[in-house]
Image (cartoon, rainbow, N blue to C red; front, side, top):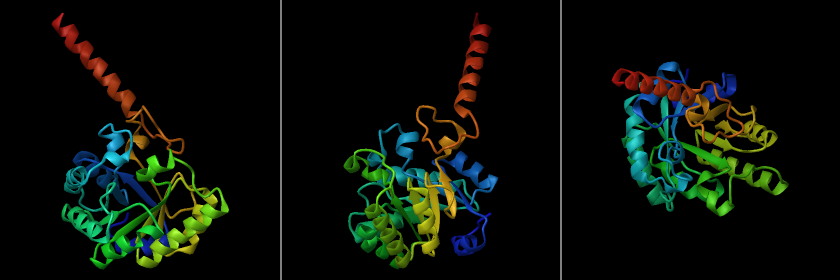
Length: 255
């Protein structure tokens, strides 16, 4: 059970692997923390699984502050990582300003998407004394430019770019890097080449840890589930069953 970001190097070297889940509100965060999850991510995935947006690009800084604050109120032990949303880190100055706002909410670290191109922002965040988590591979905030969610690391050019991104973030001082939707062999190669902990999602089992969107784990968002996400519960089914039972009780009592 991780209690501090300072333990990440030891966990990379000696295990066990990191178990990371998302949270967007107080009760979920409290339950994840009580259950012993290593890290909690307040992901901009909240735009889709909480707010019903078509993708993450509509998530604002105000939304992230609102949800990060709620999550941090429910956490006593786990480190909380908060996403910098779309268009909130266009310059190093903007990146630092908004990172500080998330840290003020109680987050332990911030995350943004991108590699080499984002190094000025990354260095500015780290120089401001804020722990930083990277995110490379498939970048949800770039879904419109890329025309969909596509697996990365299929060509030699993509592999070279991913390795360069990972190494740049590692050298800049990232404590961890999320590897999303990357060919597993490439994700394993990156994991072995850098000091930072790698956290995979749809990138195979060769990373230093795994992250899932909690509604995918619990089966509470039945309208879409990525192919790599194995549900461990059927919260949607149980919710509908309970609601139907309640409706029957109420209508039966009134009839």
